[in-house]
Image 1 (tube, helix red, strand yellow):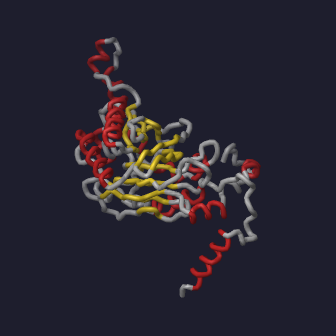
Image 2 (cartoon, one colour; image 1 turned 45 degrees about the vertical axis):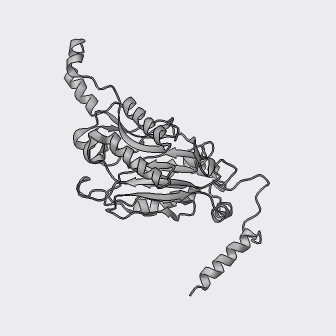
Length: 346
């Protein structure tokens, strides 16, 4: 019964020794997809919080406790669900009154205090929160109307802060799903970005080319491919999500496929399926997928409220796979354009 596995392993070993005739040798200096000479030189421990705030007004204290727990378990990076602040289960009915500058300053403070990188989703108000009486006194006229519009005007945002407390990346969701527009969320048209996220742990320094997407964004192959290709060359994509009970396959099928077809790591963090969080609307299944489409960690169960820990890093096996089937190098962009697919880089 084990013969097929044995034959597969033997074939892999032969290929790794250079005995395969199917895959021609790479040109000298040509790196495999995602496994080139970057600063991603050691494993990094990540924590995904499949959980939700209990009281939006105490978000800083609750998040700090989660971050402390992640640190004690060896994590160097913590990822939260989409709109973690204040939580989707509170945002729809209450909005989020906190000013973006204050939110981001607090997140930077938590990261600096604990020496932990953070990727946190929050509802970012798009314009200052002003009181109606002040608008009227200044001759603004329809102050109450303006205040009401401002209260419904948000970006769906995630920020990445490094372990020194520096804000490295602010990402705003591009693809809105379902009722999000009616909740006052606006889709972004900003360019995608990637940053070098540095870690200084006991195992030594490490730098990972890192980017962010939010929920529905990762279900569009173009988004991840743009990030993985030159000039971005992302190695890790962090995805806060609020995946509903109807679509667990987005976590178990799409996320691993995106990781494999781009030879990168993808971390995907969702809310648990529990009564207090929108009446069991979300489906859990937080996970980390690797360049071989295997789960590095997770997926979590539906109702689990927990920190999911996983180590991401290149192994000899993953490097061999990336060289054996280098999806990014073998693309044919000129042909795709000839068929009406006009993305220049992808």
